[in-house]
Image (cartoon, rainbow, N blue to C red):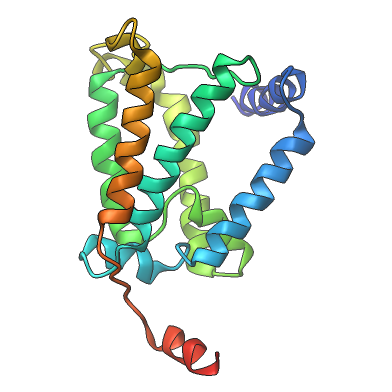
Amino acid sequence: MFDAMLQRFVHMFEIVAAEGHGSLWMVLFIGFVFGAIIQWSRVDKFEKIAGFAMLEDMTVPKMLFFAIGFASIFLYVLIEIGLAHYHVKPVMLGGLVIGAVLFGIAMAIFGKCPGTGPISVAEGRIDVLVGAIGGIFGGLFFTWAYPWLEPIMGPDYGKLTLPRFFEGQEHLAVLIYGLALIAVAFALPNIEYLDPEDHEEKAEV
């Protein structure tokens, strides 16, 4: 089992290295930039995500809405001019609902997401490291048990995309969608939860 998983892990890097629009170095560079933005915005802190869950901090949703809106437009443009492409995953309703519930519960308890978790580990946070190890074993279990879990993953609605629902108006649909999310990001109130550490840093500045 572990040999098969190791082969899949190596194959993941082989796929990235073989892509015509990028390389492993490009992936690493994007990762460094992503990590720098996360640390600068401080959304890797437990208080930010927990504050969002309690509607006491809007930093996370403002960042997410803006990032998704901007990336939707920019990525679509890159795809249309042939500089990027994506692999659409099928919409499996059962898996999405179950996964969303488990993800939400874990995020509320843990105060991290798959993006901010590794950054917190790099900062030396032991509690997050424990959660990351748990996530790895959870992924291993899911991979091993998938043949038995597959029946509850459906129904499978295929590879759906937003432009598919607006044939002939794909460009406009993506533009409106992206701009709407960006507008929501700016419309959300600037509420920020500050813990004692934040107050100390602001006082020093």
